[in-house]
Length: 261
Ligand SMILES: NC(=O)c1ccc[n+]([C@@H]2O[C@H](COP(=O)([O-])OP(=O)(O)OC[C@H]3O[C@@H](n4cnc5c(N)ncnc54)[C@H](OP(=O)(O)O)[C@@H]3O)[C@@H](O)[C@H]2O)c1
Image 1 (tube, helix red, strand yellow):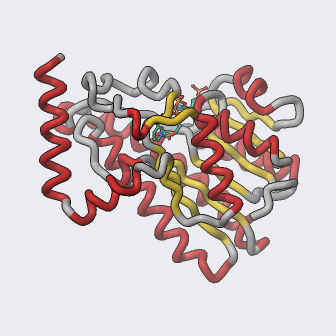
Image 2 (spheres, rainbow, N blue to C red):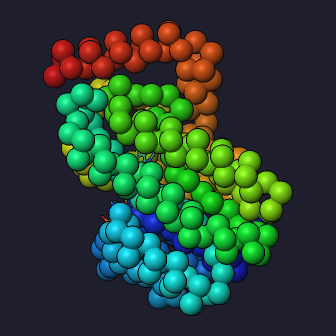
């Protein structure tokens, strides 16, 4: 896809990966529609020409306003980046049903509802791409982020389903699986913090700018899946080919970190 002049709707664009995607797409001449809860941060991220819709993305009203604003201002949506999301560092059985639902409202149901609202417009124009920002945790279940991993696996499966459903209609779906991106993600988790040492391997660590550059490259190359940094691929393949081995290793990392803290 050529990005120049395309209309990109980005959720969670006030900081981190979303703000970096806004900057990278703006540099390539995209027209931006940005959302998150903090208006001033969105205005900073998007510059004077961006359309900004402030609100909580888990509220239906925010999602409706977002799509309406994009269509009213630009008449089309070419790229939807479902990026807003949060972590949850808590044992599966200790997570309250309310917190598990809140996680899924943000990481899964908000993207699903935006897709429901945007896909009919893309189908009518026989063009467009849905980008779902998943995680390496969607490919390899991380035991210190269990329900988060479940939510990202669901998001990845949703991208796969959409891709097959929309294949004959010129509308695409791309999954992005970042490793460790240096953002406010850990401080902004719905609850808990990573046990010391488990997420600190340099091999998976990138900046938000590097992550956004990978998203843009993926868009330009019509990629199916972007794993960034690429060091995540061997881990994803190992988890698929040798699941028992990888599970034993990740479990050992979790328990060693907890014993040490
Ligand atoms: N950082 C990583 O290591 C990493 C790795 C893999 C995947 N990811 C994924 O990448 C995405 C972005 O994460 P990040 O690292 O950039 O995290 P971040 O720095 O915490 O940014 C999260 C963004 O989401 C917005 N947001 C959160 N809750 C929201 C809500 N209820 N309504 C509207 N906006 C909301 C925040 O804006 P406001 O606070 O202004 O609302 C912010 O712009 C997430 O889906 C995350 O799961 C991150």
